Amino acid sequence: MPAVRGDVLLLVCAMVKVRDFIGPYRLTRLIRVGNSCAVWEAVRESDNARFALKVLRQDLRKDKQELAFLRHEFEVASRLSHPNVIRMYEFNLDGEVPYLVLELYSEHNLKQALRTGIEPWWFYFQKIIEQAAEALYHVHEHGWVHCDVKPDNFLVSSEGEIKLIDFTIAQKMGTSRLGWFRFGKTFIRGTRSYMSPEQIRGKRLDARSDIYSLGCVMFELLGGRPPFTGNNPDELLEKHLYAAIPNIQALNNNVTTEAADLIRRMMSKKAEDRPPNMWEFLKEFRTIKVFRRAPRRPGEVEQPDEATEPEGR
Image (cartoon, rainbow, N blue to C red):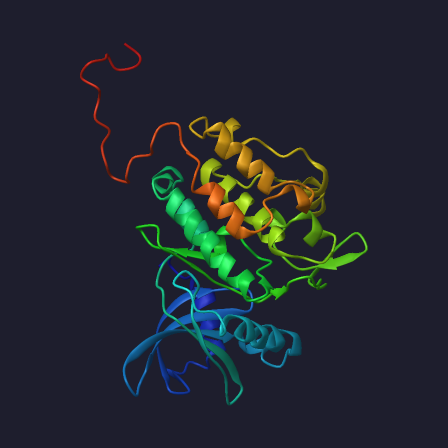
């Protein structure tokens, strides 16, 4: 786990009033701190079972919107049961401390993992994307659009096993929901680097919006950066709406043309030009070759071909 700054740790201690317990759970380790919540590893005293607790920040515990987000996340995720989706067990108000009880999966998120370098993850690319798509297909089959598909919301093990997390802004298929930040005359929710054009416009969403966002994630995993960047937040959103879709081969010439074409179709401006649903995407993805040369397993040393001279001689 990354080191936690002293000032952040002091804030988090204040969040739980420097208590060792929340309800029947004993806090053992701070996992991460977000904008509104801290996630702790905890042990249930009755049976020593280990869980993750997502605890609302102390100064937000009277905030009705933040409480609604927490309750909404539980209502969505508690109905899901898939090996690549984090399990959600409880929503509790212990005195004045609102918290969720989740499956413990002590791994970095994919965004953190990519900061150490993208090439080691190419060996697991097919596995990661298949699991991500299967997790999202499960969410869609239950009638929800995740709405915040990004590397930060996939926990990933060193062997490429992933868990989809954070259903705070998930919404029902075919609905639209406004809020959070303003773009033009519209208030929208989501993460600017990965949002579909229809999400930016506040339109009704279906599975194809998550397909667009997954295409952005695939681009970043292969190229080391999101497909679009901007000098300011609105410029970034404008690029999702109007800019030409970049070709991943410009950043990674080991990607095949068929994989690059699939990513570009996933990121089509019009939803009807993308794969129609996550299952159809999966079927196609499983038939294509992503890399021209197969990536090496992390730590594996490339063996020179004895029959040829090394390049550069």
